[in-house]
Length: 349
Ligand code: KG4
Ligand code: ZN
Image 1 (cartoon, rainbow, N blue to C red):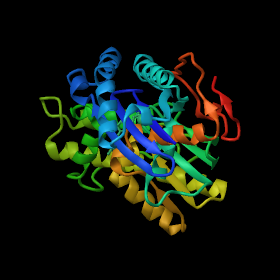
Image 2 (image 1 turned 45 degrees about the horizontal axis):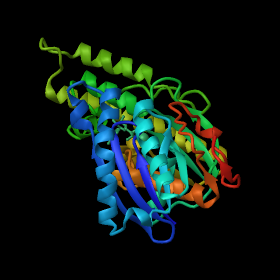
Image 3 (image 1 turned 120 degrees about the vertical axis):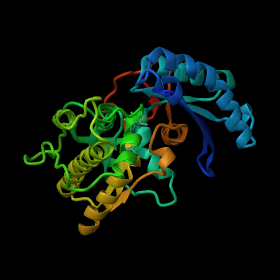
Image 4 (image 1 turned 135 degrees about the vertical axis):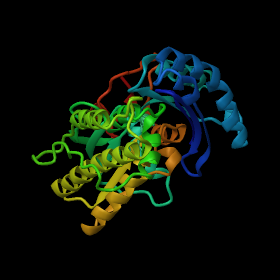
């Protein structure tokens, strides 16, 4: 089955063609970073309008890359939620209409399930069951994945998501949007041990997270060391970036270890934008190596938003007989635990 995947939940227009037997045939992405940079964050209306401009040309582009025509498409998968409502509507309306025009089925995909399944596109995919750490701009969740579609929420952030905390800390250091990768790059010049930031909620049992205290701690440290122009010197900024990244990574590692022990599992999948963080990957690999557990993640470009993960996730659900209704129904908020398992075929709500 050849599935066209469409991702438009936030500020990247992602399109891909995934074939159930041949694998990923083509994928392309347009990032709106430059469009939103001058505002310091995503402007929803600008995002929707740009998805409208880019989506059809990108679909033509993947078809050309894969040497296919529209008539070869056997199903369409689009992100149904969670995300920005206007942005979601662009992908959902286009995907649903395209499927109807071609007379093929469509499926609405949960964006975070897409992230969670992205490592399945790699050469060494994780077997089920496993524990997943989803760390993106909007979510920080630990999930017990019993099988595809069977998710138990083990813990989540009570306030900011890890990616959001990275972005806010980056802003305090006057780094441009999107701050996460920029802060990570700055941290490479940082001195280990100069600052020690707290590891929030690690001294009590449970698998929830909280990053807002760490944010305040970062702001206080920046303010205490600020020069008259409002920012600390360059080395101090790098040292703060290092301490912040170290604290987030340590906190995530502690909770991942705890989740694996609680579930009696030896496989951890990390997914979502923050799973691109090299420092976090290294720390997890070293900590989990000691408990003879393995870490799985997607290649860098499939950690952040992309169309390939939507095509893959959609393909699995379509093959199980699940279908989107004709009415377009996007879900800006959508808990992943509400998803149907793969054994339930039929028309989506
Ligand atoms: O999954 P994603 O592309 O979009 C959402 O679904 O939210 O994640 C974006 C988030 C942003 O907060 C971004 O700053 C963060 O992931 N991010 C990173 C890195 N790359 C992206 N955070 C830390 N280190 C990185 N290398
Ligand atoms: Zn995402």
